[in-house]
Length: 391
Length: 213
Ligand SMILES: NC(=O)c1ccc[n+]([C@@H]2O[C@H](COP(=O)([O-])OP(=O)(O)OC[C@H]3O[C@@H](n4cnc5c(N)ncnc54)[C@H](O)[C@@H]3O)[C@@H](O)[C@H]2O)c1
Ligand SMILES: [Zn+2]
Ligand SMILES: [Zn+2]
Image (cartoon, rainbow over all chains, first blue to last red; front, side):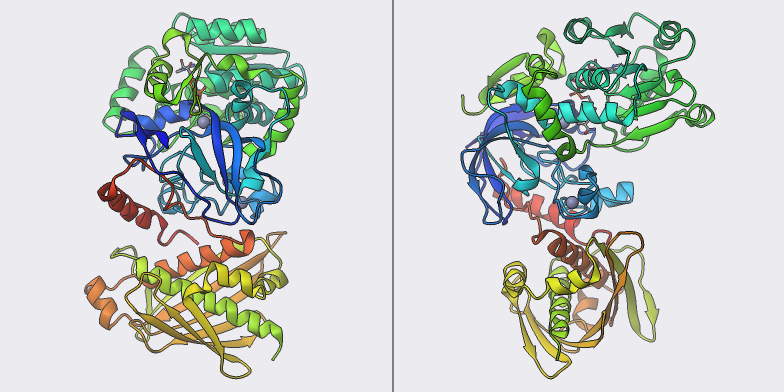
């Protein structure tokens, strides 16, 4: 079959690879119908997250059709149209039982590196390096999904592939970001990053009761799309002093909750950014935490900072004093896909959330390399390229 | 003998078998030096399984499930009321066999010894209820003598290979009890040629062996 493979830092290629097969009782094989790029892939492609190997198949946000089931699979049948959470969860450990699926104890068979880096190993993730289990990804004609009963969900009739595909990752991530904010109604929520994740976080915050949502980015077309589709306010950080603007927009209070949906390759203008970038390129620091710093500085006293942008290691100049003295609540994590997907599919089916507009660039798998280039360089107003292996 | 004891012996067999597997795949590595007591290296490891103690013991009655998961390379033979012999062949091949004698010492406790084979060892496993609703702690202690083959493999520094094996074994047991299977991504497709795949398998091995149980 054909698949999009990582070939070294910054290099991708579509190759012939073997087809996957059932390896364990709970496995299913999914014929991929749509598979999206995600901001996390950029961290992997650029070598900021560890343990990628040449030939690894990328992709973790996808939908498709079940074509084979392992002997232990009960909930799914061949022919079912499913969307699959990016995070692999066993369904049988304490973390799964308490719906903290991205912390699953048993889904990363290669836990040694993350245990060393972080003290414990979180869940495995499909198509996400050998540190996250070494699973093959979804930018391929077929993918093996372990624990199929736990991770794959039937798609409601009438929902398009290019919309439901985001129920795999961008939607649950955005929802969890807003969920972390513990909104009671009437809050002001600021969101850093107008990518797929930031946009879904903004929409989720609205649904969960935020009165005003302010989205921050530097890409005018993404900000325009957010304003247009979601009716949020926007700040362009390349033109405006973000902290000043947020203080002014909230009459001095600062946002009640600040969501960071940018991640470790956060961009900025000015000298500190040059310093961070130089250190990161020389691998002296692993993450560029510009937007996290800003979120902490901007947040109102006693407010919540919710981080869903992915970070991998150590950061410099983390404003711990601000967080401590303002008594902030910090929440963060990889999303608990399986906890949110069924609820999100219901909301999708009735049109309460409509993520279809994120799929700005649908294309064939063969065009995948160009798809990533458009996405990485944010060309042609690309929000997400969605690959169609069957096309 | 009660069937509980049989179940227990199976748990021991699994530990020992997985230990054999862990030993077979572990490579030369130096972390900390294990404690030494009277000529034995001593390692203690624990893992928490999200099941009540009865269920942890009961799991091992499902002989079929156990066979499917592990026993391809192990056989268990009852010697008398409290003792079993477990013979496990090295899953990495090479014809190495492990013969362990397993004794059930009481409810929630069993021990085993391996006198033949490259690494003489003694071990015991205790089950303890975990606090809050957290299931059962499996606590294992392993004593081994690093001589002969092990010393030749590891060099004079000695080593923690059995420690890695023990951690691996506990992680596998936890996964088996909690999910009925052990995840393996070694055969997932990729764009690698045979040489690249070999190099990647070595990386996988380093990322797999041990773990922090
Ligand atoms: N926690 C999870 O489970 C999870 C799941 C999916 C994605 N993610 C992470 O979420 C992040 C966003 O993903 P995405 O797919 O939307 O990526 P994306 O690349 O499409 O979007 C990131 C956006 O952030 C903007 N940005 C860069 N620096 C900024 C700054 N200083 N302030 C404000 N905006 C800035 C960029 O212009 C871009 O529009 C990534 O780090 C990704 O790894 C996390
Ligand atoms: Zn993602
Ligand atoms: Zn789990």
